[in-house]
Image: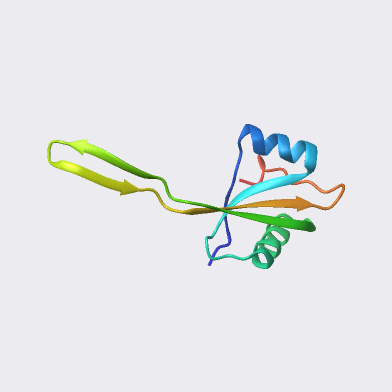
Length: 96
């Protein structure tokens, strides 16, 4: 089971990494904070101070078509915000 799926690279996540030394990742929905911490430390060789997780609910939508009403939804996701120790950093652009 791979814990880390991919890093989140948005304006908000980049600003958070520069100011607060926190990096955001999409992670496996069944992973807990301890597993996420170990996976980040193993993948990037840094020491993690704190891990915060967010469960993102699936978006539901309805389409009105010729054949009738179609219901659908996206997959649920889990995000992890990882705070690193002082002086440590991850270069996400070279480790992809």
